[in-house]
Length: 387
Image 1 (cartoon, rainbow, N blue to C red):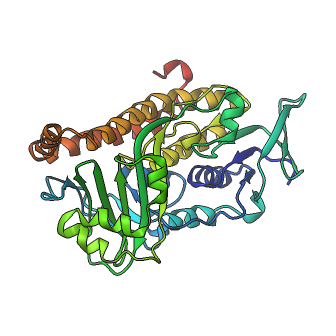
Image 2: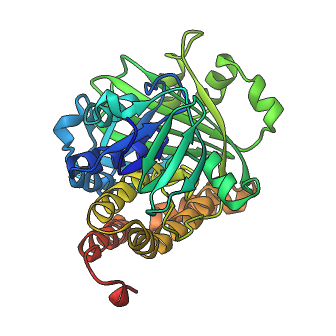
Image 3: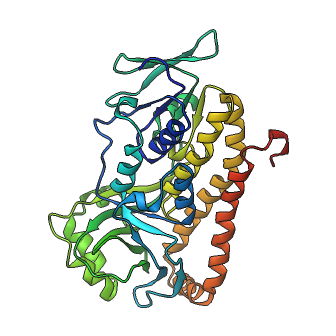
């Protein structure tokens, strides 16, 4: 494939979602991915209402996602009070293994459009305004625009900004995994226990997506932790934790990583557009990282289909920058509050969960979702009318 409309670096959620949107709109696409496969596994994901709306905008329904599990309530609490705050979502959230979402997105992208084991090496502008893109495997593409969707550690971002991305360390580490054959009540939970958090989300049948976050370990100590240490930590979360801990053994596959974020980077230009974690790496504390990538695809896809690259880049940045910047900040501070070390502040945190009416949180969630819906309606507005 030599000439295409858009070259996308990154075959994760952001890149595949955008590719699907562009292909459905009649544009030609080339996705370049440094890995040898697009498959992934191990962790799960919670798709909330805004993420499901974004998916519908690129032609993916909840039914297309296969074995996802409809969530009735999202509960926030502690080891001793698991439902300090219980928020009814009434099926407007879906838990599923991460690979199922990627497989669904990949199904809408022809394999001929994907180049594995390669990255963008360089690009130059041709006389007609198009870009000549050189790949690390010796291949070449000619396109209208490059989209960087290669994750929080984006190589394209570092090349454009001409320095290493300055990530913000939170001092927290997370272990993620899937467990089978566990009874659940179709509700998700996040429990706090000192400077640790345990979350679990039904994904399919009797399967749970589980994550453990701790802020009492340095990088070396976190890297040395084995399954028994993870099991011991989860055992400290009361009866619910013990049910999960007894299912963990040496065969359990863990994904471990430090929790970091970074500044929003969305430069306006006709050559390269940044989206997803490449543009706004955020902590997972609010469960919105993948949702923001899907929202980006739902906005950027139609813009690239209907406008020239420079206009699409300007409008995309104006529509998205404020929303993602605010969410990055909120997500960081949500993690900081969840891991406070002072016992008095911990009690205050629990009291806040118990005293704030769930209706207030539900209203805030509606406001949060509506701001995305307004962006969808404003896509076709002139730049002069955008605020």
